[in-house]
Image (tube, rainbow, N blue to C red):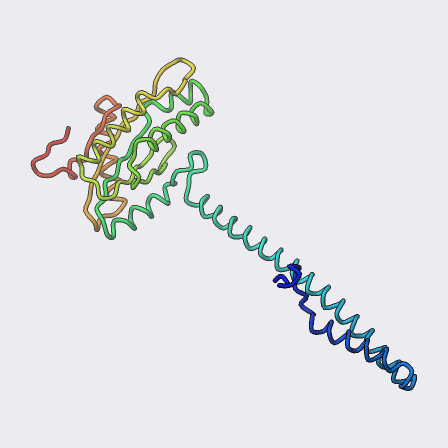
Length: 253
């Protein structure tokens, strides 16, 4: 706090300083009138009080430094806790959710809302790794994630559930809307420039499942995975919807 008169920081020991000034004045006034013993006692009192003030100020400065260091340490601990939580829930290469986090997310959201699940797998990814090496494979994975992030709606969550397999969680989306999103993702990957050494492109196959609230990850993922393999067997680079997700009048594409 600043002193109103001077604008300088207020002295926490202003009252003690005033007492010290009064004592000094008393000491000076009674030098001739009082005995030597009284003078000595008052002088000792002043010296002791001055030492007390110096030590108190030193302790306050030390306390302030300790408080600052504790605040800095607490901030760092909070940052580390957030970093550890992020690492526990996210894939280290891509930064999207990892498999465990996707499972927890889907099961939690199924308690109160409908969900569509898109499962996609990069086509012929082993050929890319074998032909060009794992660093190129990692670049392809990062490129696919960039495509997903550019297309999915803001409410969606992306997860990497396997080496080249990803899941997109779509809350409150119908089968038709989910299929539209998946087709957008398929097209984005198909047209993306992955800059492979041989100039070839990359495609992915997609499976979709939908379930009302009350479902669970294992069931929804299993259905989407079955649809994904239908897409794989059908020639890859296509979207398929799980048969049990369709309404009675719908037929699998």
